[in-house]
Length: 124
Image (cartoon, rainbow, N blue to C red; front, side, top):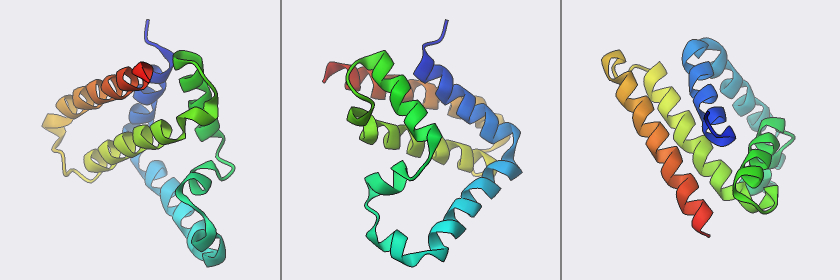
């Protein structure tokens, strides 16, 4: 049985790849919201930008804390790293930068990268 964080990462990839238009629209909408309020965008640090009323961020940080111990707020940087890895992989595959015949390899690389990040985080 998959562990919760690994399963959540796999589902993120699956959703982005099976709903590419919705996935792109979501991030375009988020970008437009931030762009429409330059004062908010200028004042926000990376941590604040990631925390902005995004339940999925809090959910993932909770999963990380449950799996690795500690408090959800201990995992802000790890959550950002996982999101950057997964979002980058999804976008590379959606945009066909990674050709469809190599998608399985990319997903395998993502899985091993997630495992490495989690293993390193558990050592701290």
